[in-house]
Amino acid sequence: MKKRRYEKTQGGNPYQLTVKQHIIPNKSISRFVNQDGFVEVWMLGADSTIKLRPSNALFCAMRSWDHRTEHGLIKGHEDRFQKVADEIVIGGRNSLSGEECHAITGLFLLWRLKHRFWLEPLDDAKLNGVLGVNTTKDEQEILEKNGYAFAKPDGSFPGRIMAGPLIAINLDRDLVRYGALRWGVFRSRGREFIMPDIFGSQAVMPLSPRVCLVADSPDGLASDAVVAQINRMAISCAQTYYFAKNFRAT
Image 1 (cartoon, rainbow, N blue to C red):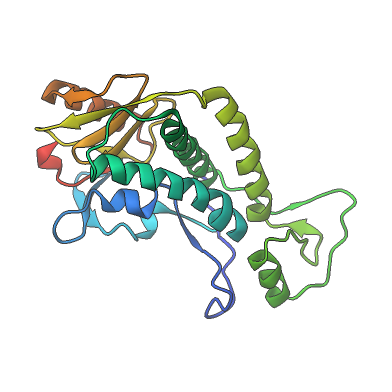
Image 2 (cartoon, rainbow, N blue to C red):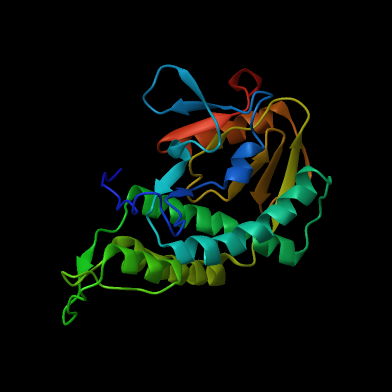
């Protein structure tokens, strides 16, 4: 993972700019919490399990894209997805419509893009021909809050400002390629599913300890052997961590 210092806001964050940006939506992680509000997390390379709340910074990028992208593009896709996810997990829905599958695909592709920009955040960059603008930090934060791009006094553009359009462009491209995916609903009555930080190219998305979406598969009950197979895939795809409600039940 590329390490970098993110640009902190002014003291008190007066314009409430989003700093902690969840890779997997907070609500999605929350479906895996135990009765005490924690998930069990295994860090790759560690030799023990830690317990964390869904709000923990481990699950977040730190200001890797701009406020507009977080509250516009990303929130829109997450809201559509969570509505479908609630109907599946809480309402017992199967046999998803094309529109519902498209909402799932949008979130899945966005998950991959956010993970990529978390691992490889863009550095601030100078563009040829762009002159610096003598703006204060307060003015820059007002511009970002209102969805505007800006150059700093040295002529550089913040990496997070450039990341937003790139996420949008890549998402549009990927939706053209994968927008017709059909998602099957797997339900387990035994072992529980593991959620990795990323599933990579595998079109799999656990929704809860006992519900998992798998692309181009029929709806049905998942045997313990199938759950174990999906969990092995989750562990092999994970790049930083994976989590579960209770590893002993997986």
